[in-house]
Image (cartoon, rainbow over all chains, first blue to last red; front, side):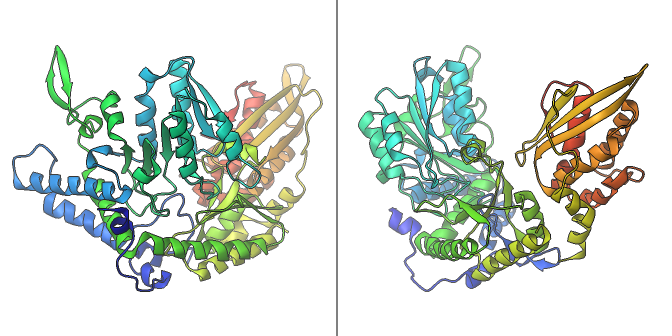
Length: 417
Length: 153
């Protein structure tokens, strides 16, 4: 199945947030006796009923262990679990489902790669990151450096929040051990030119890992066209439950890397004088996996593909444009990350109002945002800020919710004037 | 604006936040400590001058610097007012009382602790409790000469 059929819907009926909201029961709840305006989607998205139905159906109709049973339920569960892997393959347009390893999320996906690369690193190795990485795309590499003596290089971020691509290009040298870069900045929403980055890497013969946690479910993706070696993402940021995600790795890598965790499922034969490992992806999936989570992730992908990711992304872009305009009219408000293109994430600071206090005031208005460093402390240091307030949108948000955000900011400005 | 919010951000709290007391670095402090809230990136530094009369020690001087939210700034400001000139042992007990009062499920034991009672509503906001306690933990670390940076985690 190509990306066109996986991510873009055949039907082109007009979509609206209002009609899509009905699919998300949690959006109809109230907070502090106000209707919920959930603008913290970069932290975690809400789940559509279709995902919850898939979970219930799995539990009732087929829950059993996978790849083990000699009974009907286990067969059903295995078929659904492997069916979810095929959906993930189609979602990313990977060449084979064997290139998709289910993990707990993007963090575990990145750790899996970092933990399995020791044999390719030594004290002369260098790993290139950017200044806008989430801690989960920094710390695993620091730990790899501690084990092997390798060193980190960091490409700078411009004042606009964009990656300094010229500086980055200068840092991509043959012999570089790995490039690990985020697709979309979780703190600012800025979309990195991952096509250019992968092209540079190919020319220099350097492997690339893309942290797609903030991109998956918002930005169309084709890993073959992109040409990355690894792509990590989480289910809970694309309308699936927490505790499930995946690592895409080009087939030769999964043959080359040693196993991550040891246990059941990842073996073919175990004897006390030696063990034969299973083939990828099972080689990297020790223990009973998150079967329900994987099936729910598949259902979330079906939901998104059913509506067409491009059309959903267009709704999010409309929210981004409207919210950016309205926020820039607020006196004393500064947006961190003004570069283009951007995903629907707006990080901002307001003179005289601490992001934490703003978050609490907005919460009382029913508006949920994130306040803090967004697990990107080096980026906050880059801008000389302890933290920011961040409003992040999904296709189910409305322009009226943006108005409520702006009105809540007005309340906070009065309170702290 | 709702009652809950007004109770959280009482006039006393906002007033301390706008003009925090003893909000400056101290020249050659006897003791100091830094506190850090990794959740939000807020930082507090507490400076102490310890006075001695025979065996008794007292808080002869206390000041702080901080990048923090209104709750954190108000808590630190109120703390310096309450503890300034206090007997050191008494001050340590008062800090312990405040920290105890903000533990989950604890009784609101903030009476007799000066204006800090105005921060009692924060107890209903689990994600904000660390904003109140950070200055107090940092004070304790300074008094106890704990060299490590205090963390709310």
